[in-house]
Image 1: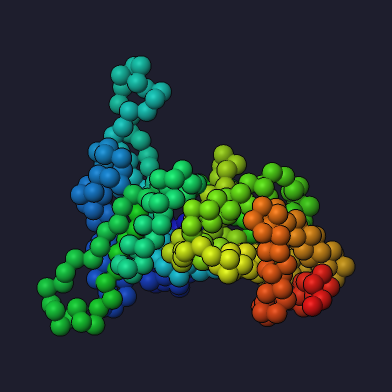
Image 2: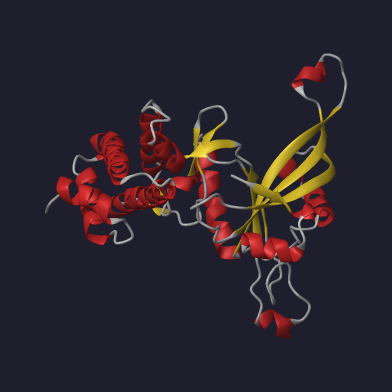
Length: 321
């Protein structure tokens, strides 16, 4: 995931390059300006839970998220905060020395009600030992003095969480499979187990796109972006997998087209994608309900008009009714 250091880019360049306003929109009252490192620093000092009760030395940089080719723009503003704390790393305990420890937290700017719901779900999962970013806190908007202005305002909150240093997303992993750059390994089982474990905890993701499943530098998989989470039920499970498959397929189709593959190579890659997704869904449906995979493919066949004709033909051939 590419991040742009906001201090090195002019306001109009940020706005044009990322389509994210450098400052919050007219009439909005955020609890802090996430673009200003000094203002973020003040806020973090007031909320020690965000940094595990360590003293903050300084905020060194604030980054704005810039999506890769064919990735989706974030519906919410997402900022990566880079700061230094005074801590005692394990390596320096014996010597008794103090080192400056560099940390990252993510500040996700959302509507207050959405932030409260997402924090609640994320906290429940994290406390259950589920692999999601550690929640660090939620800032709520302060009351504005001018009540007349407040009537027309759209106050925002900031949901704080750990930053996940990832290698790639699920959709990029699937792309690598299609291009022969990766082999099917334990990842399918690991991800399907993660999805089932979330359902078992009574939660459906609600927006299970390929970009929301991250492979970390330690080769673990983590689920992010729980803003659309809802109570688990069978239809929600079908919806979760429907979104995951269609979003990933559209991403891969666009990438394959951009590589100017000939028609035979293009169709071969999409066939490999269909086989891989079938194998992935089989891992889930076998453990949960045998006809879940069929119901997901059936919904894709009927509703996924965003898919290209080549992949739709693969789906129709596999599930003709």
